[in-house]
Amino acid sequence: MRIARYRIVAALRERGQQVRAEWVERELPELVDSDQHAGLLATLRLDPADLVATRSW
Image (cartoon, rainbow, N blue to C red):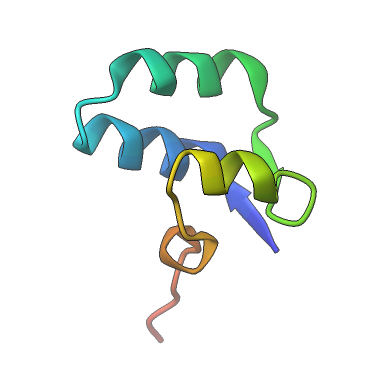
């Protein structure tokens, strides 16, 4: 699954982790592959399911 980088950044900023959010903005692509970056997401304690955009029709 692909996750928009801005969602990861927003989640980190909500927690007050500004330095990590800035690093993510510099180092990760605009769309983050949750399988490829599973270790990083786990280290950041982020659940990919919580970061995926949900559509309301």
